[in-house]
Amino acid sequence: MMEKTFPLTTAFAEAIVSAEPLSDGAAVAAARKAIVDWLACAFGGASDRTTRILLEQLPAGAGEAVIIGQGRRTDALTAALINAHAGHVLDYDDVHASVRGHPTTVIVPVLLALASEERLSADRLIAGYIVGLEAMARLGLSLGMRHYENGFHATATLGTIGAAAAVAHVLGYSVAETATALGLAATHSSGLRLQFGHDAKPYHAGMAARSGLLSARFAKAGFGGARDFLDNPIGFFSAFAFGEERPRMAVEGWGSPWQIVAPGLTLKAFPCCTASHPVGMIGLQLHGEKLDAGLIDEVVLTFPPGGDAALVVTTPTTGIDARFSAEYVFATALVDGALKISHFGETPVRDDLIAIARRVRRRHDEAAPRMSSDPKTRFVIAEIKLKDGSRLVREFKGLPGLSDATEKFRDATDNHPSVSAIPDLVRTMRSEDDLHRLIALLAHSLN
Figure 1: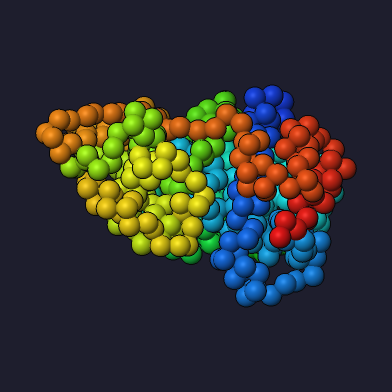
Figure 2: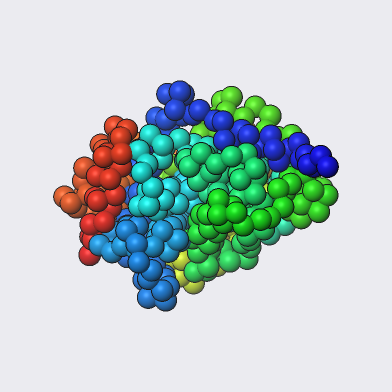
C-alpha cells in the first residue's frame, strides 16, 4: 500500500531540514543583533515578579540548562519556559511584521536550553534561530490577518511551531520526523489576546517554547501524530485562518530573502506594545516642540483598520496594562519626554498622565488599507485641538526601532561587569566553546 503524501506539509518540513542560512551573511548579522537585543530583555525580565512566581511554582528538574540572570540551572523544558517568559515580560523584545508577534523570545530560549544537552556550536544555534523564525513568519503570512484580529496571540500559536522547527533543523531530523514534530506543535498552539495587560501574556511565550521543544522531543522518540497539519481539511488553516489562508505562502520564496532580513525584525526602542510606538514617537516630537500638555483640549489618534488591535486598554491602572494603552503612551511621551521601563512597572499610573490620557480618543481611517505585514500600511495621525481653538497635526509612518542593542543591554543589566562581555561575544561567536562561554555568562546572577 502506498503511503499517503501531504504535499504542503512535506514541502514545509523539507525546507526546514535542508535550509542553509549560514551562507547568508546578512541573515547571520541580523540574528546576532537580535540575540543581543533579546538577552537584554531576558536579563531585564529576570527580576520581574511574575518570573519569580514561575521559579517558585514550577518544579525544578535536574539539568544544566541556565535560567538567565538567576545563578540557577534546571532541566531544559523548565529553563526554556522561564527564559522565554522573562524575555517577553517587559514587552521590550523584538517584533516581526509577518508573524505579527515576537519570534526571538520563543526560539532562542529553546536553543539555549537544547545546548545544555546537545553538542551545539554557536553557528548551529544561529542557524536554528534563523530557520525557526522563517517557519513562524511563513506561517504568519499564510494565515492572513484574521488569526490575530479574531483573538489569537501569534507569538504563542506560531511560536510552538517555530520552536519545533528550530530544534528539527539543528538536530538534523528527517522530513518525516520534522512533519510529526510540527504537527504535535500545532496541536499545542494556543494563546488568546484577551490576556494582553495581564501576567499570562508573557507566559504565552514560555508555553510556546516549552511546547515546541517537547513536541520535537516526542517526535524524535517515535511518538506519533498527524503529519499533515497544513494539508488536512480540518488542520491548521481550517482552525486558525478564518477563511483568509494563503497556503502556498508557507513555502513560496522560502529564504529568498530570509524573513529575518526582509521585512526583518524591529528591535524595540520602548518597553511597551509595538502598536503604540508610532504614538510614542509623536508624543516625543511634541515634547521636543515644548507643547504644554495643559493647553490640550482633545487629541484624536487615527489608525489604519486593525492598527490598534493590540492596544486593548484605554484607561490603565498600573504600568503593566499601560503597555497596551495608546492613550497612556501618548501622554507619557508628551509629558516626560521618555518611555522607560519605570513607566511600565507594577505601580499605579500617575494621575497627571491619566488626566492627559483621558483627553485622547481613537478613530480609524476606513479608506486606508487594512494594516498588514507591509510596513506601508502602518501609520498614526494625531490631531491635537488646543483650548484656544487652534489645531496641530502630526503623523508617523512605519515603526521606529533600534539599529543596535548594545546600550539597551547595558541599561537592562545596569552595566554589570560580570555580563558586560556578552554583546561582543554574541557578535563573534562561532564554535561550541564560544556557545559554552556565553551560557556560562548567562548563568551569572545580577541580584
